[in-house]
Length: 426
Image (cartoon, rainbow, N blue to C red):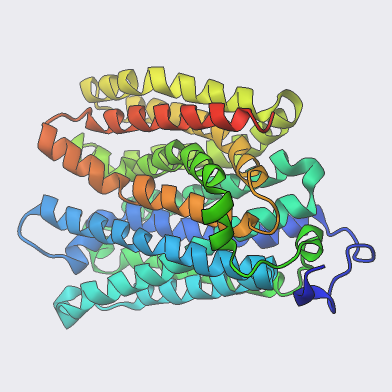
Protein backbone atom coordinates (compact mmCIF):
# COMPACT_ATOMS: atom_id res chain seq x y z
CA UNK A 1 0.00 0.00 0.00
CA UNK A 2 1.11 3.55 -0.66
CA UNK A 3 2.57 4.81 2.65
CA UNK A 4 1.44 8.36 1.93
CA UNK A 5 -2.17 7.33 2.59
CA UNK A 6 -1.99 4.62 5.28
CA UNK A 7 -3.60 6.93 7.79
CA UNK A 8 -6.27 8.37 5.57
CA UNK A 9 -7.58 5.75 3.16
CA UNK A 10 -8.21 2.04 3.19
CA UNK A 11 -9.66 0.62 -0.05
CA UNK A 12 -11.57 -1.99 1.92
CA UNK A 13 -13.34 0.49 4.20
CA UNK A 14 -13.49 3.73 2.21
CA UNK A 15 -17.02 4.12 0.81
CA UNK A 16 -17.58 4.51 -2.91
CA UNK A 17 -17.60 8.25 -3.66
CA UNK A 18 -20.47 10.00 -5.36
CA UNK A 19 -20.11 9.87 -9.14
CA UNK A 20 -21.39 13.40 -9.62
CA UNK A 21 -19.36 14.95 -6.78
CA UNK A 22 -16.21 13.27 -8.07
CA UNK A 23 -16.91 14.48 -11.60
CA UNK A 24 -17.55 18.05 -10.52
CA UNK A 25 -14.59 18.30 -8.16
CA UNK A 26 -12.06 16.93 -10.65
CA UNK A 27 -13.40 18.55 -13.80
CA UNK A 28 -13.77 22.05 -12.36
CA UNK A 29 -10.02 22.55 -12.45
CA UNK A 30 -9.92 21.40 -16.06
CA UNK A 31 -12.74 23.84 -16.81
CA UNK A 32 -10.85 26.74 -15.20
CA UNK A 33 -7.67 25.85 -17.08
CA UNK A 34 -9.39 25.77 -20.45
CA UNK A 35 -11.58 28.80 -19.79
CA UNK A 36 -8.49 30.96 -19.26
CA UNK A 37 -6.73 29.45 -22.28
CA UNK A 38 -9.73 29.94 -24.56
CA UNK A 39 -10.40 33.49 -23.34
CA UNK A 40 -6.79 34.43 -24.06
CA UNK A 41 -7.05 33.00 -27.58
CA UNK A 42 -10.47 34.54 -28.25
CA UNK A 43 -9.44 38.02 -27.13
CA UNK A 44 -5.95 37.80 -28.66
CA UNK A 45 -6.41 40.82 -30.90
CA UNK A 46 -7.32 43.04 -27.91
CA UNK A 47 -4.49 41.64 -25.77
CA UNK A 48 -2.10 42.24 -28.67
CA UNK A 49 -2.91 45.94 -28.78
CA UNK A 50 -2.77 46.25 -24.97
CA UNK A 51 0.58 44.53 -24.41
CA UNK A 52 2.34 44.41 -27.81
CA UNK A 53 1.51 47.71 -29.52
CA UNK A 54 3.88 47.40 -32.49
CA UNK A 55 3.19 49.15 -35.77
CA UNK A 56 2.38 46.06 -37.85
CA UNK A 57 -0.87 44.33 -36.80
CA UNK A 58 0.29 40.88 -37.92
CA UNK A 59 3.53 41.19 -35.94
CA UNK A 60 1.59 42.27 -32.85
CA UNK A 61 -0.70 39.26 -33.21
CA UNK A 62 2.26 36.93 -33.71
CA UNK A 63 3.83 38.24 -30.49
CA UNK A 64 0.58 37.62 -28.64
CA UNK A 65 0.24 34.08 -29.98
CA UNK A 66 3.95 33.59 -29.39
CA UNK A 67 3.41 34.40 -25.70
CA UNK A 68 0.43 32.06 -25.80
CA UNK A 69 2.64 29.32 -27.26
CA UNK A 70 5.76 29.95 -25.16
CA UNK A 71 3.74 29.48 -21.99
CA UNK A 72 3.10 25.93 -23.17
CA UNK A 73 6.81 25.17 -23.15
CA UNK A 74 6.71 25.00 -19.36
CA UNK A 75 3.80 22.55 -19.36
CA UNK A 76 6.04 19.45 -19.70
CA UNK A 77 7.96 20.69 -16.66
CA UNK A 78 4.67 21.05 -14.80
CA UNK A 79 3.76 17.55 -15.97
CA UNK A 80 7.00 16.14 -14.58
CA UNK A 81 6.77 17.97 -11.24
CA UNK A 82 3.02 17.78 -10.59
CA UNK A 83 2.57 14.41 -12.28
CA UNK A 84 5.33 12.86 -10.17
CA UNK A 85 3.85 14.61 -7.12
CA UNK A 86 0.49 12.96 -7.89
CA UNK A 87 2.12 9.54 -8.27
CA UNK A 88 4.04 9.94 -5.00
CA UNK A 89 1.93 12.13 -2.68
CA UNK A 90 -1.48 11.41 -4.19
CA UNK A 91 -3.88 12.67 -6.86
CA UNK A 92 -5.70 14.91 -4.36
CA UNK A 93 -2.55 16.79 -3.29
CA UNK A 94 -1.60 17.51 -6.90
CA UNK A 95 -5.14 18.62 -7.79
CA UNK A 96 -5.19 21.12 -4.91
CA UNK A 97 -1.83 22.60 -5.87
CA UNK A 98 -2.64 22.92 -9.57
CA UNK A 99 -5.91 24.81 -9.07
CA UNK A 100 -4.25 27.21 -6.58
CA UNK A 101 -1.53 28.04 -9.13
CA UNK A 102 -4.13 28.57 -11.86
CA UNK A 103 -5.85 31.18 -9.71
CA UNK A 104 -2.57 33.07 -9.22
CA UNK A 105 -1.99 33.27 -13.00
CA UNK A 106 -5.58 34.34 -13.69
CA UNK A 107 -5.43 37.10 -11.08
CA UNK A 108 -2.24 38.47 -12.63
CA UNK A 109 -3.73 38.66 -16.14
CA UNK A 110 -6.97 40.20 -14.90
CA UNK A 111 -5.21 43.02 -13.05
CA UNK A 112 -2.04 43.56 -15.09
CA UNK A 113 -1.38 47.16 -16.29
CA UNK A 114 -0.92 47.59 -20.05
CA UNK A 115 2.17 48.54 -22.03
CA UNK A 116 0.99 52.15 -22.08
CA UNK A 117 1.09 52.22 -18.26
CA UNK A 118 4.27 50.36 -17.32
CA UNK A 119 6.09 49.82 -20.61
CA UNK A 120 8.14 46.68 -21.23
CA UNK A 121 7.26 45.27 -17.79
CA UNK A 122 3.70 44.65 -19.03
CA UNK A 123 4.47 41.95 -21.65
CA UNK A 124 7.10 40.41 -19.34
CA UNK A 125 4.59 40.07 -16.49
CA UNK A 126 1.99 38.76 -18.93
CA UNK A 127 4.42 36.06 -19.98
CA UNK A 128 5.13 35.23 -16.31
CA UNK A 129 1.40 34.86 -15.64
CA UNK A 130 1.01 32.55 -18.63
CA UNK A 131 4.04 30.52 -17.46
CA UNK A 132 2.44 30.04 -14.03
CA UNK A 133 -0.78 28.92 -15.68
CA UNK A 134 1.12 26.62 -18.03
CA UNK A 135 3.02 25.00 -15.15
CA UNK A 136 -0.17 24.41 -13.16
CA UNK A 137 -2.02 23.04 -16.18
CA UNK A 138 0.86 20.63 -16.78
CA UNK A 139 -0.28 18.30 -14.02
CA UNK A 140 -4.03 18.90 -14.09
CA UNK A 141 -5.14 16.55 -16.88
CA UNK A 142 -3.08 13.52 -15.82
CA UNK A 143 -3.92 13.79 -12.12
CA UNK A 144 -7.64 14.41 -12.59
CA UNK A 145 -8.10 11.75 -15.28
CA UNK A 146 -6.20 9.17 -13.20
CA UNK A 147 -8.40 10.09 -10.25
CA UNK A 148 -11.58 9.55 -12.27
CA UNK A 149 -10.73 6.24 -13.95
CA UNK A 150 -9.29 4.79 -10.72
CA UNK A 151 -12.46 5.56 -8.77
CA UNK A 152 -14.79 4.27 -11.50
CA UNK A 153 -12.88 1.75 -13.67
CA UNK A 154 -16.13 0.08 -14.72
CA UNK A 155 -17.30 3.35 -16.34
CA UNK A 156 -13.93 4.70 -17.47
CA UNK A 157 -14.87 5.59 -21.06
CA UNK A 158 -17.90 7.58 -19.94
CA UNK A 159 -16.49 9.25 -16.84
CA UNK A 160 -13.17 10.19 -18.47
CA UNK A 161 -15.02 11.73 -21.41
CA UNK A 162 -16.20 14.47 -19.05
CA UNK A 163 -12.64 15.76 -18.95
CA UNK A 164 -13.10 16.99 -22.49
CA UNK A 165 -16.79 17.78 -22.10
CA UNK A 166 -15.72 20.42 -19.58
CA UNK A 167 -13.50 21.91 -22.27
CA UNK A 168 -16.64 22.31 -24.35
CA UNK A 169 -18.39 23.95 -21.41
CA UNK A 170 -15.43 26.30 -21.05
CA UNK A 171 -15.69 27.14 -24.74
CA UNK A 172 -19.39 27.92 -24.26
CA UNK A 173 -18.65 30.29 -21.39
CA UNK A 174 -15.76 31.98 -23.19
CA UNK A 175 -17.76 32.32 -26.41
CA UNK A 176 -20.72 33.73 -24.50
CA UNK A 177 -18.43 36.42 -23.16
CA UNK A 178 -17.17 37.06 -26.69
CA UNK A 179 -20.67 37.38 -28.13
CA UNK A 180 -21.97 39.39 -25.19
CA UNK A 181 -19.10 41.85 -25.03
CA UNK A 182 -18.98 42.46 -28.80
CA UNK A 183 -22.75 43.12 -28.86
CA UNK A 184 -23.01 45.00 -25.56
CA UNK A 185 -19.89 47.16 -25.52
CA UNK A 186 -18.33 49.54 -28.03
CA UNK A 187 -15.09 48.28 -29.57
CA UNK A 188 -13.00 50.86 -27.74
CA UNK A 189 -14.39 49.90 -24.33
CA UNK A 190 -13.59 46.25 -24.96
CA UNK A 191 -10.06 47.30 -25.86
CA UNK A 192 -9.72 49.58 -22.83
CA UNK A 193 -11.00 47.21 -20.13
CA UNK A 194 -13.78 44.93 -21.34
CA UNK A 195 -11.46 42.06 -22.30
CA UNK A 196 -10.53 41.70 -18.60
CA UNK A 197 -14.10 40.80 -17.54
CA UNK A 198 -13.94 37.08 -18.46
CA UNK A 199 -10.62 36.71 -16.62
CA UNK A 200 -12.23 38.08 -13.45
CA UNK A 201 -15.11 35.66 -13.98
CA UNK A 202 -12.63 32.78 -14.21
CA UNK A 203 -11.34 33.71 -10.77
CA UNK A 204 -14.76 32.91 -9.29
CA UNK A 205 -14.43 29.24 -10.34
CA UNK A 206 -11.19 28.62 -8.49
CA UNK A 207 -12.25 28.96 -4.82
CA UNK A 208 -15.21 26.63 -5.40
CA UNK A 209 -12.98 23.95 -6.89
CA UNK A 210 -10.39 24.41 -4.16
CA UNK A 211 -12.99 23.94 -1.42
CA UNK A 212 -14.54 20.83 -2.95
CA UNK A 213 -11.22 19.16 -3.73
CA UNK A 214 -10.17 19.40 -0.09
CA UNK A 215 -12.94 16.89 0.78
CA UNK A 216 -12.03 14.19 -1.75
CA UNK A 217 -10.83 10.69 -0.87
CA UNK A 218 -7.74 9.30 -2.57
CA UNK A 219 -8.27 6.68 -5.29
CA UNK A 220 -8.04 2.97 -4.31
CA UNK A 221 -5.58 2.15 -7.12
CA UNK A 222 -3.12 4.76 -5.89
CA UNK A 223 -3.35 3.47 -2.32
CA UNK A 224 -2.64 -0.10 -3.46
CA UNK A 225 0.42 0.69 -5.59
CA UNK A 226 4.01 1.01 -4.31
CA UNK A 227 5.55 4.45 -4.65
CA UNK A 228 8.30 4.65 -7.25
CA UNK A 229 11.39 6.73 -6.52
CA UNK A 230 11.11 8.37 -9.94
CA UNK A 231 8.03 7.80 -12.13
CA UNK A 232 9.73 9.81 -14.90
CA UNK A 233 12.77 7.49 -14.88
CA UNK A 234 10.49 4.46 -14.99
CA UNK A 235 8.73 5.84 -18.08
CA UNK A 236 12.07 6.68 -19.73
CA UNK A 237 13.45 3.19 -19.11
CA UNK A 238 10.47 0.90 -19.61
CA UNK A 239 7.44 2.80 -20.93
CA UNK A 240 8.75 4.91 -23.83
CA UNK A 241 6.51 3.13 -26.35
CA UNK A 242 3.43 3.88 -24.24
CA UNK A 243 4.48 7.53 -23.90
CA UNK A 244 4.92 8.02 -27.67
CA UNK A 245 1.66 6.21 -28.40
CA UNK A 246 -0.27 8.38 -25.94
CA UNK A 247 1.33 11.51 -27.39
CA UNK A 248 0.41 10.43 -30.91
CA UNK A 249 -3.19 9.83 -29.85
CA UNK A 250 -3.36 13.34 -28.47
CA UNK A 251 -1.83 15.45 -31.26
CA UNK A 252 -4.86 15.79 -33.56
CA UNK A 253 -7.20 16.26 -30.64
CA UNK A 254 -5.29 19.22 -29.27
CA UNK A 255 -4.73 20.69 -32.74
CA UNK A 256 -8.46 20.68 -33.53
CA UNK A 257 -9.18 22.14 -30.11
CA UNK A 258 -6.82 25.06 -30.63
CA UNK A 259 -8.03 25.44 -34.19
CA UNK A 260 -11.51 26.06 -32.79
CA UNK A 261 -9.99 28.60 -30.39
CA UNK A 262 -8.21 30.23 -33.33
CA UNK A 263 -11.44 30.53 -35.34
CA UNK A 264 -12.43 34.02 -34.05
CA UNK A 265 -9.02 35.42 -35.07
CA UNK A 266 -9.03 33.53 -38.40
CA UNK A 267 -12.55 34.67 -39.17
CA UNK A 268 -12.02 38.35 -38.34
CA UNK A 269 -8.44 38.83 -39.59
CA UNK A 270 -8.30 36.46 -42.58
CA UNK A 271 -11.91 36.10 -43.71
CA UNK A 272 -12.89 39.64 -42.60
CA UNK A 273 -16.06 38.46 -40.88
CA UNK A 274 -17.77 40.23 -37.99
CA UNK A 275 -16.52 39.30 -34.53
CA UNK A 276 -20.00 38.50 -33.20
CA UNK A 277 -20.55 35.87 -35.91
CA UNK A 278 -17.18 34.27 -35.22
CA UNK A 279 -17.83 34.06 -31.48
CA UNK A 280 -21.32 32.69 -32.13
CA UNK A 281 -19.89 29.82 -34.17
CA UNK A 282 -17.46 28.90 -31.39
CA UNK A 283 -20.30 29.15 -28.89
CA UNK A 284 -22.28 26.58 -30.87
CA UNK A 285 -19.17 24.43 -31.21
CA UNK A 286 -18.65 24.57 -27.45
CA UNK A 287 -22.23 23.49 -26.81
CA UNK A 288 -21.74 20.51 -29.12
CA UNK A 289 -18.54 19.52 -27.32
CA UNK A 290 -20.14 19.84 -23.89
CA UNK A 291 -23.24 17.82 -24.81
CA UNK A 292 -22.02 15.30 -27.39
CA UNK A 293 -18.73 14.23 -25.74
CA UNK A 294 -20.27 12.39 -22.74
CA UNK A 295 -22.90 10.88 -25.05
CA UNK A 296 -20.09 9.60 -27.25
CA UNK A 297 -18.48 8.27 -24.05
CA UNK A 298 -21.61 6.20 -23.43
CA UNK A 299 -21.50 5.06 -27.05
CA UNK A 300 -17.87 4.00 -26.62
CA UNK A 301 -18.90 1.77 -23.71
CA UNK A 302 -21.22 -0.12 -26.05
CA UNK A 303 -19.31 -0.34 -29.35
CA UNK A 304 -15.72 0.09 -28.18
CA UNK A 305 -13.34 3.02 -28.25
CA UNK A 306 -11.18 2.07 -31.23
CA UNK A 307 -13.98 2.07 -33.89
CA UNK A 308 -15.12 5.53 -32.81
CA UNK A 309 -11.61 6.96 -32.84
CA UNK A 310 -10.75 5.48 -36.25
CA UNK A 311 -14.02 6.65 -37.80
CA UNK A 312 -13.68 10.22 -36.52
CA UNK A 313 -10.08 10.50 -37.75
CA UNK A 314 -10.85 9.13 -41.22
CA UNK A 315 -13.75 11.55 -41.64
CA UNK A 316 -11.58 14.45 -40.52
CA UNK A 317 -8.79 13.41 -42.87
CA UNK A 318 -11.02 13.45 -45.97
CA UNK A 319 -13.12 16.50 -45.06
CA UNK A 320 -10.83 19.14 -43.55
CA UNK A 321 -9.41 20.46 -46.84
CA UNK A 322 -12.82 20.66 -48.60
CA UNK A 323 -14.20 22.35 -45.48
CA UNK A 324 -11.56 25.09 -45.51
CA UNK A 325 -11.89 25.44 -49.28
CA UNK A 326 -15.65 26.05 -49.09
CA UNK A 327 -15.14 28.47 -46.21
CA UNK A 328 -12.54 30.50 -48.11
CA UNK A 329 -14.67 30.52 -51.28
CA UNK A 330 -17.79 31.47 -49.32
CA UNK A 331 -16.60 33.51 -46.31
CA UNK A 332 -19.96 33.94 -44.62
CA UNK A 333 -21.11 33.45 -41.04
CA UNK A 334 -23.32 30.52 -42.10
CA UNK A 335 -20.47 28.59 -43.74
CA UNK A 336 -18.26 29.30 -40.75
CA UNK A 337 -20.95 27.97 -38.42
CA UNK A 338 -21.40 24.77 -40.45
CA UNK A 339 -17.64 24.17 -40.56
CA UNK A 340 -17.24 24.66 -36.81
CA UNK A 341 -20.18 22.33 -36.14
CA UNK A 342 -18.58 19.61 -38.27
CA UNK A 343 -15.20 19.96 -36.53
CA UNK A 344 -16.89 19.94 -33.12
CA UNK A 345 -18.86 16.76 -33.90
CA UNK A 346 -15.76 14.85 -35.06
CA UNK A 347 -13.74 16.18 -32.14
CA UNK A 348 -16.42 15.11 -29.65
CA UNK A 349 -16.50 11.52 -30.92
CA UNK A 350 -12.70 11.20 -30.90
CA UNK A 351 -12.30 13.12 -27.64
CA UNK A 352 -14.75 10.93 -25.73
CA UNK A 353 -12.66 7.77 -26.00
CA UNK A 354 -9.25 9.43 -25.77
CA UNK A 355 -8.58 10.07 -22.03
CA UNK A 356 -9.50 6.57 -20.84
CA UNK A 357 -7.45 5.09 -23.69
CA UNK A 358 -4.44 7.13 -22.58
CA UNK A 359 -5.00 6.10 -18.96
CA UNK A 360 -5.04 2.41 -19.92
CA UNK A 361 -1.59 2.68 -21.47
CA UNK A 362 0.06 3.31 -18.08
CA UNK A 363 0.00 1.40 -14.75
CA UNK A 364 -1.27 3.26 -11.68
CA UNK A 365 2.27 3.83 -10.36
CA UNK A 366 3.16 6.04 -13.34
CA UNK A 367 -0.30 6.92 -14.68
CA UNK A 368 -0.49 10.57 -13.61
CA UNK A 369 3.07 11.27 -14.77
CA UNK A 370 2.71 9.35 -18.04
CA UNK A 371 -0.60 10.96 -18.95
CA UNK A 372 0.55 14.43 -17.91
CA UNK A 373 3.76 14.19 -19.93
CA UNK A 374 2.25 12.76 -23.11
CA UNK A 375 -0.71 15.12 -22.93
CA UNK A 376 1.40 18.22 -22.38
CA UNK A 377 4.08 17.39 -24.93
CA UNK A 378 1.30 17.05 -27.51
CA UNK A 379 -0.48 20.19 -26.33
CA UNK A 380 2.76 22.19 -26.24
CA UNK A 381 4.16 21.19 -29.62
CA UNK A 382 1.00 20.70 -31.66
CA UNK A 383 -1.63 22.74 -29.81
CA UNK A 384 -0.20 25.77 -28.04
CA UNK A 385 1.69 26.92 -31.11
CA UNK A 386 -1.13 26.01 -33.54
CA UNK A 387 -2.54 29.57 -33.80
CA UNK A 388 0.93 31.00 -34.43
CA UNK A 389 1.81 28.19 -36.88
CA UNK A 390 -1.42 28.77 -38.81
CA UNK A 391 -0.84 32.53 -38.87
CA UNK A 392 2.70 31.96 -40.18
CA UNK A 393 1.56 29.38 -42.74
CA UNK A 394 -1.01 31.78 -44.13
CA UNK A 395 1.56 34.58 -44.23
CA UNK A 396 4.31 32.47 -45.86
CA UNK A 397 2.19 30.51 -48.35
CA UNK A 398 -0.24 33.28 -49.15
CA UNK A 399 -3.01 30.67 -48.93
CA UNK A 400 -5.94 30.93 -46.56
CA UNK A 401 -6.20 27.13 -46.81
CA UNK A 402 -2.89 26.61 -44.98
CA UNK A 403 -4.47 25.55 -41.63
CA UNK A 404 -5.98 22.51 -43.36
CA UNK A 405 -2.52 21.21 -44.32
CA UNK A 406 -1.53 21.24 -40.66
CA UNK A 407 -4.59 19.25 -39.59
CA UNK A 408 -4.13 16.67 -42.37
CA UNK A 409 -0.57 15.85 -41.27
CA UNK A 410 -1.59 15.51 -37.62
CA UNK A 411 -4.59 13.33 -38.54
CA UNK A 412 -2.23 10.84 -40.14
CA UNK A 413 0.00 10.81 -37.03
CA UNK A 414 -2.91 10.19 -34.68
CA UNK A 415 -4.45 7.54 -36.93
CA UNK A 416 -1.17 5.64 -36.79
CA UNK A 417 -1.17 5.89 -32.98
CA UNK A 418 -4.72 4.54 -32.82
CA UNK A 419 -3.66 1.44 -34.74
CA UNK A 420 -0.76 0.92 -32.31
CA UNK A 421 -3.03 1.39 -29.26
CA UNK A 422 -5.57 -1.02 -30.74
CA UNK A 423 -3.10 -3.88 -30.31
CA UNK A 424 -3.27 -3.43 -26.53
CA UNK A 425 -6.81 -2.20 -25.83
CA UNK A 426 -10.09 -2.90 -27.57
